[in-house]
Length: 149
Length: 308
Image (cartoon, rainbow over all chains, first blue to last red; front, side):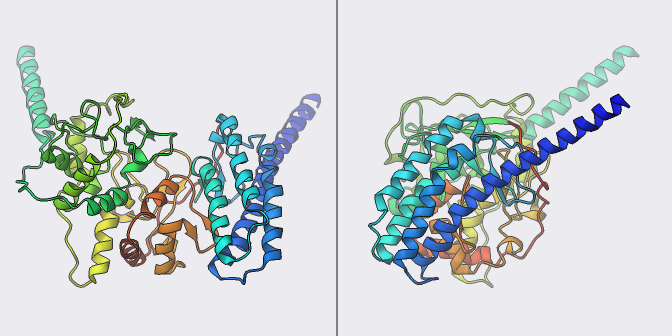
């Protein structure tokens, strides 16, 4: 009986750990999605004319992006060792093999955002700002973001 | 009796070795190259279509024209290290003749007469026009010489035997030139030439068999990343059906996808190259890609249990 209890507890704990890891992966995915929303669903769409230019919306998106970027290092501290179930993209294991290098890609993004913040006045300056910020995102995605399907 | 058997076995072995040697003999491209003035602008275009910089530029430095090599390329067969193709006379290709270069790019044969490993995508490059390759050579000569010999590839036996590549070429490399399709537009044919040849898109965007040959029926239908982690997407209309021709061309320039995302991973450096092309060449590639019939590729694993 005692042995069965131990086995059952271990199994439960194991399942709990797996779920917790999935939760970590989901949190990381959500953080990146939130940034994609600011940069792509708002800013990129405006640069393409899919939605009209709106200074307030731009400022808000940039502020959200800035806040999210500041959370990357901490949110990616733990390696969940799995991807979000059915996710199209995931984090490469290289993130945790070279965490210092991964983290070093963050300040350039922050600098790019700081450089353009409050200086965007029209679609042309928005386009330039978008490229400047997105290029720094790409510097990291080139190595650390994986397409999964 | 025993002696006889041994002798027979020995003879068969010698004969087999002879056949292997004959089958795997590297055959350089024997064509006359009449002298001509190179078109450097075309050479630069070919350089960017071919993506030379993505593998041969010195890693971890910003100048994509310093072609000193050294980038490790993982594969199921071991790790390849991209060689120095800068004009350095000792460590690069500074002393190569034009025919050396043409044989290397179009046949995968070194100036010393050895097979290159097909990590160098000559199985695609071979359909290139000789004049395009000559212009590329002239353009490479204008780039800075970078000293430093790159380390040897790190391949286990038997993959380290270059002679075996001769068999691989017989199995998986079709030697014919590019044949335009007369029923299609010149734009489509230019796209087909660029995508299948110098662009070597199929090299990553197709699944491969156990010997590393592209599975022809699933060409462009995506597959596991040959470097290990992740998945290379299906670029037939099965995968890109919702993208318009214009959206494909825009993606090749900016990496932006219609679904509101941008290219990542190994496609990033490819976009950096393609962004330098003429808009006409990107549009031609898009026209060809948009015409690829939908093909089901292999199924990506449901969920990666990533290692640390």
